[in-house]
Length: 554
Image 1 (spheres, rainbow, N blue to C red):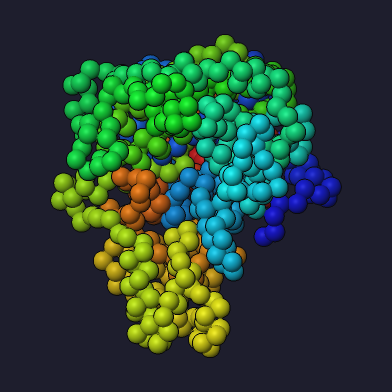
Image 2: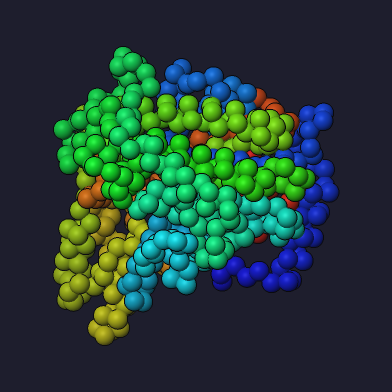
């Protein structure tokens, strides 16, 4: 599918489809409370980066009355929600949520991937045509949604209601840009300065409310601030203690002082906040400023505010979701959400908005934790694996280094070398697949030919891996690790990116008393189902590439 083209014809088609969707009275649709608008004035779309559903349920008894508990006690929530594809990473998740499209269609196959011809790294939201406003911009920094090949709910909404506003906010560029879609506006945390910035894709200069927020330097109040545990020590008995031996060069212990070794706020201090509750507090403060500055939810044209809270992902990468630090970070998020909902009720009105909370992926337990539990687990070196693949291919074909590199959970063959040696790419790919499948840490591997044709439908993980594989951007042999195995990384104690439940099982929590009834739904659903469901609640057509179904709202 080519990059999204916003032509006059597509606007007309979208407008007609949305009008029909809005005018129709769908059977079984949610009822509205007397006096409430027919559709919400504001959709607040919250993403907790790297939050596995198991944490939500495990810590339920420790929640505040009106944070996560607002969803669990008074909203509709789905106990068995999953990602339906295999390579569960941040960008893919943020692209799926509001488009309803799997990576094979959205083109967002990973946080980054390698160009199949040049070998150059492509960043999911990288676009060198644009720069951050008022900030230095690197080659691979995220500045636009150009690589997203599909439309989002916000794109559809603004296509038929140009006065509607769609704003994405996140500690990560990809967490802001991808949910905001092509027609929204994204603001991301600048870890070099502690401020929020957009890019010239969206505007030439920031509006006054953004400049005022940044000029106040609210982030500096966290300098030398302590991340204190939310509860007494005994409350964390089910979590791993601080400073586990396998934390290695990333020690973690509470309380933790922000910028402890620094004399003044600096880029190192601003970046360190990403591994704390404070970056999420900042993101929600900026969201409040956006609500006021853009007057979100103040008229009859529905608006969308997407806020991706990035801190939990950084905490889990460093110390694991089983750690006390992650447990406590979740409890701080709960308190932050409670305060944010209180302010939303006051500024927008509790019967005027719908809040939705989900995650872009879950998290695997650290291999050391899994081994303590008696499970087969470990870390796999990518460079060593590539060496073994190439050794096997050389033994078979007599040519060295036929495997060029890995990209987005796939092996890419050296096409130029294959042509020079007159080797059949399909035969080499099949041989590479056999080597991969024999690896103790690999659960499944499939070739380009198999993925393109669908010939292995029903084979282990094949359907999920096919949804992660894009013909133009993905490699020649897609693979998935076995449970509790991960590729080694210099920046992570543990990670995500597999088709296993610890990575795919995430929350889908919804609250909006005018439209949604209190209920727990145990039927298995997917995050791709969010886009058509939210489009329906907003009275517009589902995004054109959406593959999800309507969530079974009671």
